[in-house]
Length: 236
Length: 207
Image (cartoon, rainbow over all chains, first blue to last red; front, side):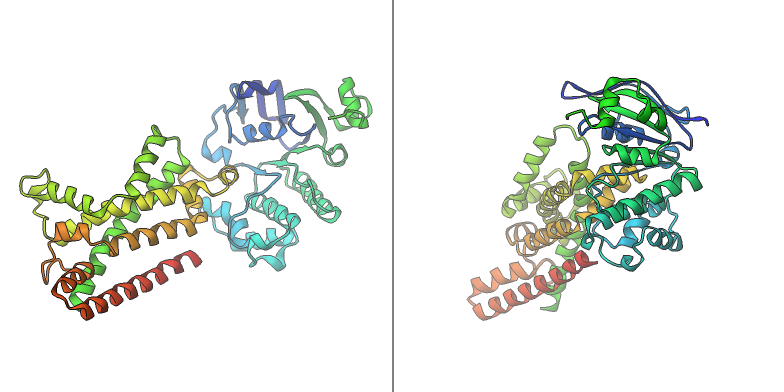
């Protein structure tokens, strides 16, 4: 595998408080990497930076060796947010939005993706009228339709019912295994990270405490805080 | 009568189109971008929303009069002067209400559409589209403000029959002449015109 992202000496603060402090991190092309940690640990901030939506106060993030990637490069990255905000339009228009931005309207591709996330019956419905789980699937579909090289997922199944969790997890797995999409999954659910990821990192107070293969992370954690987090002993 | 109605629609229609073309993007920029002296600009715009039309008319009159800075244009007592005055009245309304409408769109949406690859201009047009109910309300309010105003068009147009007489100035004239029936009838026409125009403007919101 070759490096896709390389983060070096990243520091970020809001109102004088450090929210991110990462010395080094490399994300390999094609891997499914999960970051776990409690709420407020800095996981979502890290995702925004990897999508170049926000700049770090200090340090460098390189994507494909580019510290300031062009629009063409950043358009290879798509994020699915924990609380997706949809346009006041139909499901089909929401899913096709990113393609229209690129002047690549493709109704067939849009309908295929909508069917893939199980919403074919709602393609012409107003996105506003759908449930939380369905809206989350629209958010996933509008990212997938762009065939991104990198998919950043911010708690994509938080507050969803088991059926939706299972559906979304199977799509994440397919994307990574069949299309080779690099996926960075942020979750506070260690079991989900264990089910899906090849490599897992623990983030606490903006710092990456430990990054290991999933097997080592769960079976032989090096850091005591990782062990406590995995065992559910850490109170946060 | 037909001439008065068509001139009324022409003057207010052109003024509204100009104010919309300038005001909607400016309102969006003010809401979405980092703008220097934003608070002061906002204060000026909000003050402009309450500009007395007669004061606007007076200012335009002074600028367009023979000795005025823009006297060389030769616009005084022409529809061009009336359009100019109405643009000045409509512009702060369009900018102010558009800014407010755009600011009411969930700020998180901007980030999320940027993550899908939107450029800053695409973000702006998408947010404007999401705020279209408020933007249409801004245009409707501006139209209501200019089609019903009399002070500015009377001053800079002069209420010249066949040239600059519009419905509001005709109503004033007929009232002064004591022909209240005709004045009321003209008032009814003005209301009907406003109703029909707003009907079409509101249809924009449904699209």
